[in-house]
Length: 230
Image (cartoon, rainbow, N blue to C red; front, top):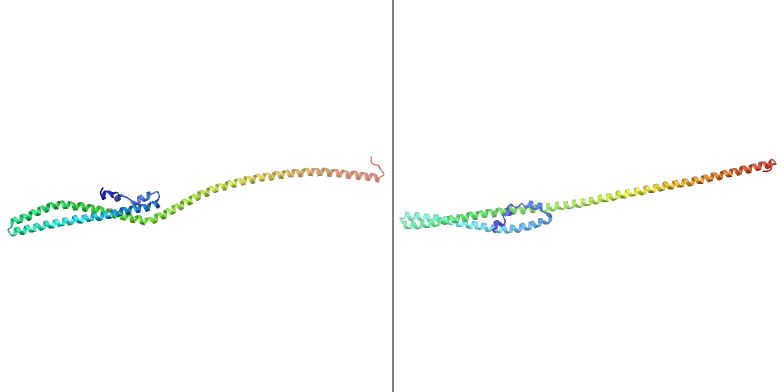
């Protein structure tokens, strides 16, 4: 496969688009640069070779045209000198050179076409590498920002989960507080009941004491009056 066929995909490749599709830009960007620089070295060497072939083909074509003009000039001089036979020799040589000219011209046009393609390929690849180099630091910086944002998002999810746990804890605490309040209320009711029982007993014995005092006072009154108790 020729060099032009080998690198024809470079002519249509959009390096920036390839980079945008990369799954890991930070890892792939350096690999792209290495691959492109390897290709660029090959293209540069082949471009120089093809350009040299173009120059060689052009030089042969120019030399051929110069020889054709020279043979035509000598033929004219021979005719002017009355040497028709010598003029025919020069004209025969001119005809041979003219026939060769057609072949040399085709070779030169093909070499010039190949040289143009190689120069275009060389220039495109060089521009792509320069563009990629200029984007490299920016892309890596963007990747760092994206990674940081991803970590923040993950932390945000963790905070949300923690918030749910805290809310559940607070609900449980409120439930326990309610149970404690109910227990305290029951204890208070029980204490009130006990106090009421004591109060009733106290009233009972207070009433009994008052009756005893009345009986004693009645007995004393009878004694004072000289009356005996029944």
